[in-house]
Length: 482
Image (tube, rainbow, N blue to C red; front, side, top):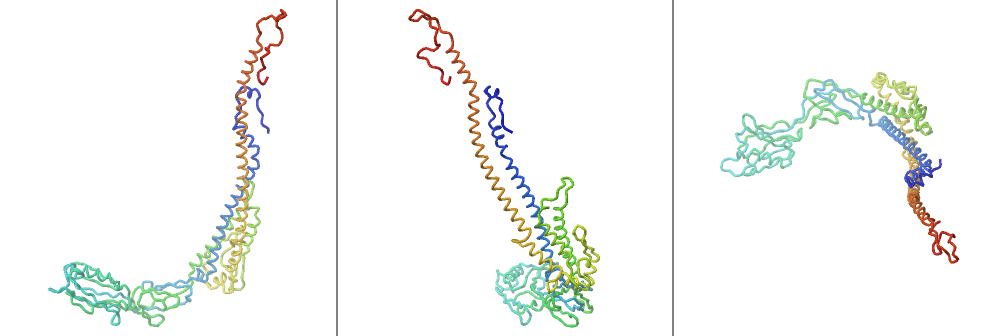
């Protein structure tokens, strides 16, 4: 629609609304801009959906990778004990399933030496009249290391200063002063257990009296009848891939220790895969679901790449192997596909499969020939999720390029409109100034015309007749513009 003006209003001196006119002129040229902006909004919405789907695909990749990991949850082992108050344990994935008899004869202990009580921990421990003395601390038994402690008056000759001195030496022992109703004592303990932590005082010229050393012995146990000695109550090597935790010495009690598949970790990993798969399938399904309000599908419904991704996922989820004691597909483990492509886990059936034949479940998901369910799924996902050639990566790159092109077009167009706007404002401002001045110009012209056309007084020419010719004198001129 064109722009029209009211002539009567324009000639009245009211002028024109410059901004409104300029905006109306520019609005007639904004149609293409609106189209581009709508396309940009659609691309941004598509990019958001692609980003969500891509994140879900990454989560699925992670969950599938855990099912192919030879050190992962499907291979995890767990240790159960018939008496966990005596001995327990943990197992690496390399541990073999089996039962073991454990007898804990004694625990590894920390070596300790301590003095009799003294009344004042700040009193000198040097004999009367002496200004020096000596202590020798042996660490590690008779074949261990002996440390000489020179006692100097005013330096380390009290319980408190001696304890501080010993701690400063970094010998692998801890010294402290303990106080009870009988007084104070110096106690020195090894920082390690077993024979290497045995302590003894082998020389003493102070007034302190040390009790007989205690502790500093190795743990003694038997595993399936084989005797073992350990400097620690955490025992490795007695059963390959298994760490034993000795809790209590009980020489007469044989504890049954069972190493087996950790069905709990395996079930969690499988359920995590199903959850990740369902999340991704759910997002894809949303794109193809018709909104009853708008009667339209999602922003990516026309994206053929997503159809390809959906088809690949559905195919991977129905993958089967042969034999394997009947555990040939997800359905055999109690994981069934619904009409919308999502999966449902029958927890009871899955737990039965894991408990009754964990090796068959493991072989279904992963095997040395890389033909397991998870192996196949992982290979497909590696291609689908490739950062350069993957389906979603390609879509996101194309979307980003299209957004940049539109943004450049919009920016260029807006720059041209801004320049045109300034030009139009200048032009119409000049027109407006002229229109606003029109009444004053008209009034001035009218006034001049009135003055020039007024009747002149009667006069007689040289012939005696009255002058009746032009109203202008010989030296008069018409008003400019008339």
